[in-house]
Length: 78
Image 1 (cartoon, rainbow, N blue to C red):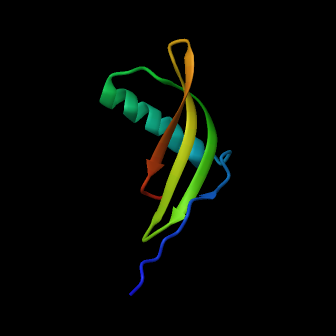
Image 2: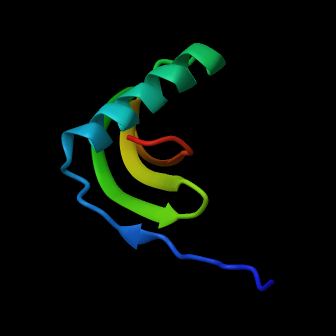
Image 3: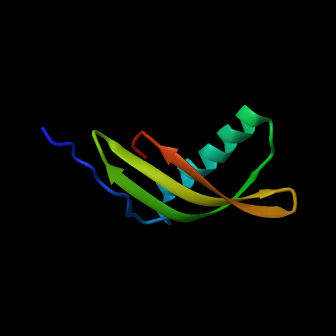
């Protein structure tokens, strides 16, 4: 049986559930790392079909005075 590979495809990065996941990811990162990043915006969102949907979200967050880009992956449904 041949392996099936899929690619990430763009999804609507303005969807409220995407923004909710991005803010959750920043909050979890802050708890785990004892940092204090401030979520700014979602800049891209992609989904890949596997045995379950995989979401990859690009976001910006403020770290002090600097705004940086971050990427997070969600292995559960949004």
